[in-house]
Image (cartoon, helix red, strand yellow):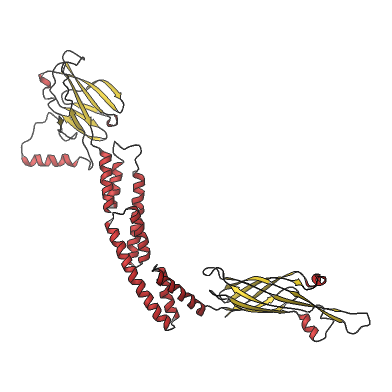
Length: 448
């Protein structure tokens, strides 16, 4: 049988105090006693062993034996209303349980004896009218409610309903239970709840300011943790609906401004279409329109002054487009060439001309404003040589080379910086040393 006389220690006061009559006073006393209990207080459960054990006590002719069987985690202590101290004859552990053998004197003066069983992890319970007979042996089994399991189940149910604050508190209560298993995982559960609460706060705020793409991402993450959160599922569906409406509105207005050649207003709306994460159709058209607008707005022509060893005068003009392939042309002349035109032979020691053309392409089209250019070229280098010391006019020779080149152009606002590596392939091997095998060319200019 189960004895359900559960009383918290301290609620009954002294056992010698006589009951006070009066319904109001009893209600007040009950309220005071209940208020002293912890909010999560759970009481020990005491069951009387149904096996008859009369006459088996061997601790004395007039004494009785009481055996208390309990889980070792409960760490029981005992108090008697009639005895100054409970005589614990022995304490024996068997696996996860412990058996206490208690000895009590008997007689009519102990007829109203009550035994209080206490534990530091549970509220105490009491056996009243503990009337024992000489040499009688009784066995009681003391158990406790499944504290951890119940709290864990409650926490899980609250989590599924989306009551995250309450669920977190239940998990915290669960780890305070006496029967916490060794493999308990409430810490990871609480960490997930903390993440969800942060995500939900950000998502709700994004939803309020109409940032549906950001809200949608956060709500989707929450649902990956808890698919049964109906509140978040509803908000997720609302985000999708609002996002679709926004996409249609942004795209329609952007197309109107684009057709009216109001490129700045159209650009802002196309960027919203992309930032909102609209569908494939809207996204592709918006991307194409932005490329067209970018080509219209951004300067694509670069004009640079070119300098290299032995040919310090040069100019390069090219089309450096953001999305399409462009072209360039470069011409370099040195001062000796101009002196040769004026027949100033003394100064025209090494006249040189370089010309090249080719293509330009932007490999990274979003973040890095750098273009690659490449193409074929021509180099001509002249030489004056006097046949003898008395000659007034030197003999002029002109050597030719094919000069393919590759390089980089970078834009910094309206400024353009250019670097070229030129390889020279002399048409005749004997002139290779005179013409040179390669050159480095540097240029600077502006974009328009």
